[in-house]
Amino acid sequence: MVSKSGIPTKDMDFLETAKKVKDTWLATLGFTLIWTNSTDFETLVNDYGTNLLSRKSIGGARPSQTKTLKNLDKSIDDAVKKVKIYITSKFEENAESEYSRYGLVHKRQHYEFPKDHQTRFNALDMMIAAIATDGFGAKPFGTAFWTAMKTDYKAALKAASDTDGSVSGKVATKTQQKAEIKKVFKALRSLIDANYPTTYKSIYRVWGWQKEDY
Image 1 (cartoon, rainbow, N blue to C red):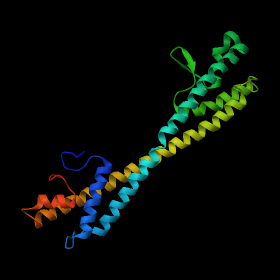
Image 2 (tube, rainbow, N blue to C red; image 1 turned 90 degrees about the vertical axis):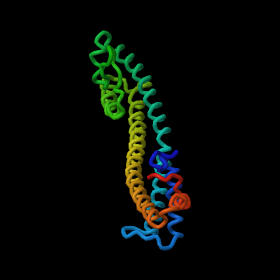
Image 3 (cartoon, rainbow, N blue to C red; image 1 turned 45 degrees about the vertical axis):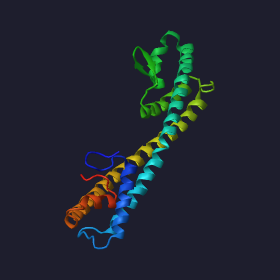
Image 4 (cartoon, rainbow, N blue to C red; image 1 turned 30 degrees about the vertical axis):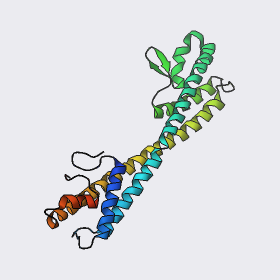
């Protein structure tokens, strides 16, 4: 897809155009810019391509990481229902007054584990402590279950956070590189306009640009 400005809007299409311009400039003698050259532009385009593919590769891991967190969240929510039964069996009509010690929060007339991932992880410490204090450690959803859950949840959160951070960094770099490439495009086209005042449109296409406007 090409925007009204003539620049491909999709990253891979933009990369292919940049590669064509790069190759043509390297093979064309006499096309000189004071502030950059074809070799530096080759490096810029290659780096852009490497960064783009790396971002896609890293970002590809996020769906599975999201699914892992979703599965862990379901396990937590199911386990909380069992823990509520433990609490009710011990405290009877006073059970709800004990929920906050277990990390549960009041939402829409009932108590639940926090939905926010980081807040939920932090609440696991409260759950583990309360389970031990009230003598539920040996239960099926006791100390062993919640300790293992904390370990798994911490690993899942870190994996997702690392991926998000890496992708954000790659996107920022890609955006900067893309802007630099566009700047070279504009300069080269101006040079073509000056050297080929009547045939510049056909020269654009030779260089890899399929549109006249940039």
